[in-house]
Image 1 (tube, rainbow, N blue to C red):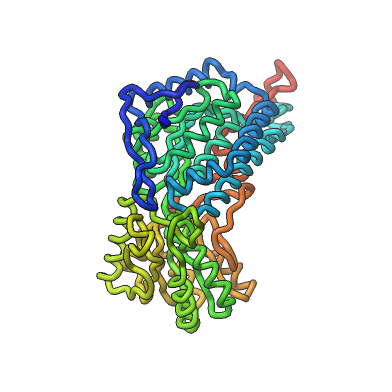
Image 2 (image 1 turned 135 degrees about the vertical axis):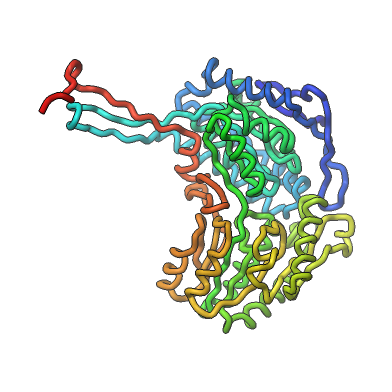
Length: 491
């Protein structure tokens, strides 16, 4: 099978018909050859999206009921093909099958959520009777225009749908560029778009790396750019977007604190901490990668955390081990470099800390779940996003110290507090400078609730009503109810 890009309603090998190889992270075997988008392909997609939005207008002007029905049809087909999509995610990304199945379920629900949201449009109506006389003022939500959507490799299908569903629901024409590391499920999703008959040019798929992203973010013919990925890459997107001051949405890095007080339930805190850092092999921007534990609770908590981490199973992700492989060799080596840096800086590695090559994992990109104790804020492993199965542990004595440590980071994506004291939980969570927070749990995410961060973790929000509004412009319309009368000069 040939894995192609999708431009102006047609599958294409692109201008240069150049391919690159993608590998199975479980064993390094060949998965597919994928056609790569050139600069000209990127320009063609921008042109197609512009014609779709500004000239053809069939998607933009389609009534919300019909557009919502098409999104529901996409959801139905995706649900019917759940097994196929989950298998592709496992083979391409390395996450355990059960996690991939949950991602497909969430993607289905996301399409249905935004389909229902646009069937009940919202706006404001105001009556004003001062200054210029009696006026009728109201607001409408309009699509932003041509939207370029760039997504990462850690949740290939789900992160794509988080952007595609609201952008399309709002009536925009889109250019979608997933990470080239994991693109197979995105190509399959565009097969569904093609099947349901989304008008040509309204939805385009490009496959490539930073070069394609730079063209999209800098183009004068792109009205909005949204990007999920590293803060460094997000800064480049932001600079490029200044070309025409295009609207931007950025969901970037994180180094999120997980604050655990001594009165917390031990087993519950350990289990949620495990989920917070080892889900998806730790390849999550919101991972609870900094554990801050009250000093008098430290020994008991760390002992139990080490026991649980050492019992994590690794293996073929199709067989549902606790953890699968890292996405590719490049990322594995990056994580291992951080692990070695932590050891060199004096952190105490109390679990894992190496590439795992035993048994069936001998040819894959596996890293044993890693725990660093006795860490300090000046260490790279505490300051920088590792994006892998490695967590740091620090201690605090007081509530004030815990808050100060939690906020001592340029990032502000997520955070959690574990305590039996409800009042303290609310006090501390209120003080943590982060956009997504939890009390006595870690990682739950809902389509209905906004997702995004403070500080260098990004701009804007995805999911919920806010996720739809990101892809809309709000227009104020004012009607003079007394034509011919100005009123400005009346005293």
